Image (cartoon, rainbow, N blue to C red; front, side):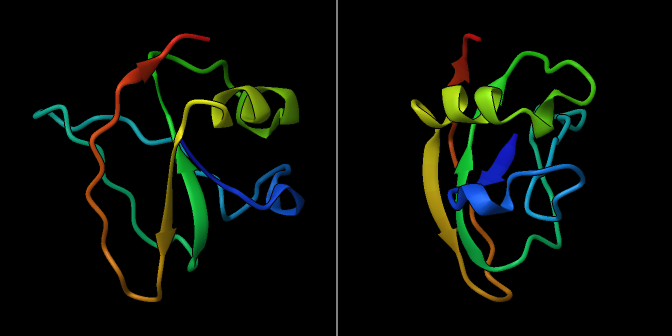
Length: 84
């Protein structure tokens, strides 16, 4: 899961929040995130619709990997699954 550091951008159908599933090689990829500061957290599963829950995002942010994304930039992150 990828979500913005700025809590003002947390919300229903935010273009700054992404749930990403692995490909056949176990890698995750997403495109089209706006530039900004983000958290990335690997979780086994997330209940449908809970990606908009501020309390879940706050909990995940405590151990998430923080990164910045510039216009047109790509990032590779190594994440460890978080327990919810």
